[in-house]
Amino acid sequence: GVVMDVAGLSISDFTLDNEQRSNNSVSSKLSQQTLLPMLVASYSASLQGLDAGAALKYLVLLSGKGKFVKEQVQRLILETRQFEILAGKIEPDGSRSNGALDTYFTKKEVSSLLMDTAHHAIGVGKPADAAELLVLSGQFGALFSLMNRELASYLNASTQEDFVKRQFWFNAASQFHAIHLAQGRTYVQNTLDKEGNMSLGNTFQLLMNLVVFFDRCREQQWEGAWVLVDELQLIPKVESEMTIKVEAFRALDNCVRQVFHHVVLAAMEALCHLFRTLKQSGAGVSIDQRNTIDQSLNELRTRARLLVTFSRLLNLPSLGDSDTYVRISQLEKNMM
Image (cartoon, rainbow, N blue to C red):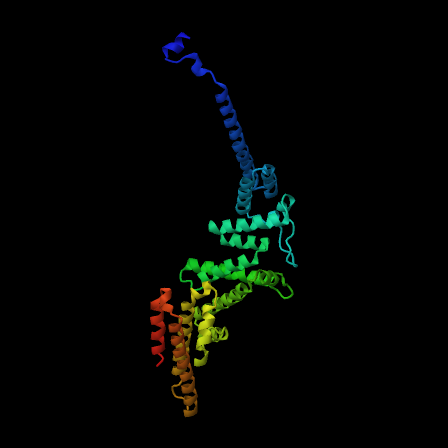
């Protein structure tokens, strides 16, 4: 005890009382409760590259750790991208075949897990993975919202990076259409109808057509571009349609309204090119041909005038794009 006294410490300082023992016991249990799940998750992660199903099997051993297990399963799904192994695939009747997840969770729990993982994927910048997961979860309304948002975002792509993303989403949307909206397959429409989301499907079809419209403009296929946008019935053909078309614009999905000034400008550019080409073709023609050409030029001028009025009524400058409105007006003046 002499050494202890010299150090200024008594023997009692090194004796654990009951309260300290109890606290240490609780601390030890807490450490075990934290450490064990982390060790299992770590071991699972080491397996996932070789066998996603085996990695999942270890994670569900921790079924008592609800939130932790859910987060680890989401990580497993996104890191391995083994969607078919883990979650099955969509059958021709719209049902989802069983995957490894179905061994441990109910159909409803798997769908909920896939949907939550999809939302997480969007949050971490993986919208393509999110789209696949939403298909598997049967959440077609959420899927259309995602595809519509992405298609609209890159509709007027100007950089190479945006062009690549635009092509990716157009191809993905085309593939989805070919597989899940093929003739005789009604499960997507039935789901949208049940959810009250049929308008999302209409917006999807519109955006797919607008992608083709912008492609034709870039390829300077001005007649084909104008014919397509005219067939989409977005812009007025005659004065009496003006109010109806303005109301129709206001009923469009917000993702389309936000990029609509690009559509109006591209339509005006197509008109202007058609006008210029037609005017140049009038040199050295007969009087009858000249009259026919003049009539067609007047029709194009009328459509251009209606388009300027239409864009003014849509209040395009309020979208923060007054420059686009000025350009639309200038193009119309070039046709006078």
